[in-house]
Length: 263
Image 1 (cartoon, helix red, strand yellow):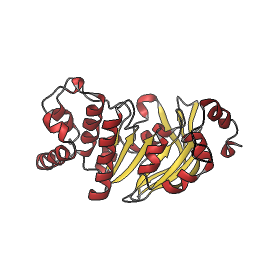
Image 2 (cartoon, helix red, strand yellow):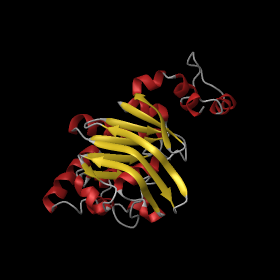
Image 3 (cartoon, helix red, strand yellow):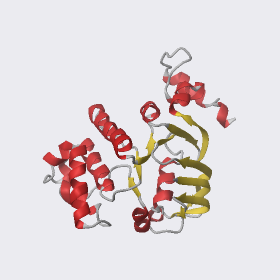
């Protein structure tokens, strides 16, 4: 479904954010991009959705292909119509509008009838939003705002839903609800998910396949099950020793300097 081949992304024609980054997302899968801050995960999503330009970024080389269509030169609204929707990091809602007004904005590429139907589906997925449909978005909790952001993306009826740090700054109980909804979208509705997440344990548990990014490139990939057993992933990303015991922060920082994939 989605193929990213050797893309290089630069900001301000000077700062290289991605170099020769390649990965694939299969139809009907949940695929995760893992990595620390600055690894290039969010830049990957912006490259796919065509939203690099506000930060003066551009894809300098490589190919991004979705269902056979190359995306690199397309405008964001065209990419949405092709079937890709992104939930940005930090939600970025219209905080002075109501929950329902925010959701309806996401359906600008759809007919009124489709919007009405999809709105009901979103309220079934997130019952909390039905209760708050008339509330001003700026007064919602962080978790409720994330639900609105996901719902707004779903209003476009995407084939591929991209989520950027959906657990960031949210209470654990709400994170569970959000990830339950993500799995529901994938299993019951067949929606393909591309997930960017710093919580490696949560992402590996949820995704069928994952790619690990460091310094703007993919350095490791595998199934969620295989990565959960990988010594490097366990020690650096999950903070676990060989016997499953928790490592101290001092040990983890030391291990960062000797990760095999950076040698």
